[in-house]
Amino acid sequence: MTSKQRAYLKGLAMSIDPIYQVGKSSLTPEITKGLEEALEARELIKINVLKNCLDDPNEIAQIVAERTHSEVVQVIGKKIVLYRESKEKKKIELPTDKRNSGDKKISGDRKQTSANRTSTDRKSTGDRKLSTDKKTSAKNSYSDNKASSDKRFADKKASADKRQSSSKKMFSDRSTSTNRNTFRAKKHP
Picture (cartoon, rainbow, N blue to C red):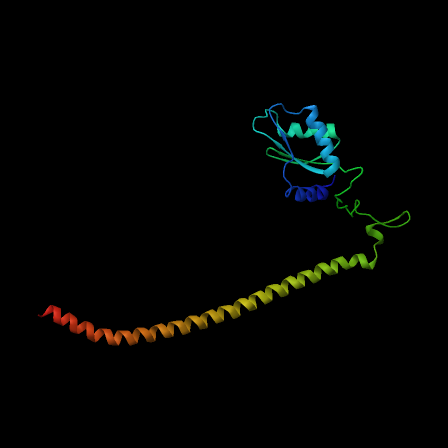
């Protein structure tokens, strides 16, 4: 199983719940038989190892994989994920790795190596250059957007400051005369 396939199966396993629990009695023949049936029906299963089980979950995963002829996808804490391709009811289509040790199969027995690649294969480097151009233009558009948003923010702030200062002036003219009169009245009765 490749790492790409394993990652795909891990993603699928995130959404499923454990269907078997391994407890104090650890692995029994009944649990093994049930796991075989579940693997045939579902292909991908999750097992929960309970706290009262004294065995290590990694060891349990290896033993179950051997007995059921399946593969261990992952063991996280006390959860085990197993995969086995079904013989009758194939449900999961694993991604295939398109690269085979740097050589591409063209037709017949002739393999394409780095020495005799065609111009279409060389386009990938041009595509990389285009993608960096897109990144540069994205950065430029980001900086342009940021500059325009900074200008709008400065304009809004200036207009808000102008309104605030004019309202302060208006209220300060009214309040100073009344405050002075009340102050004088309290100070000199």
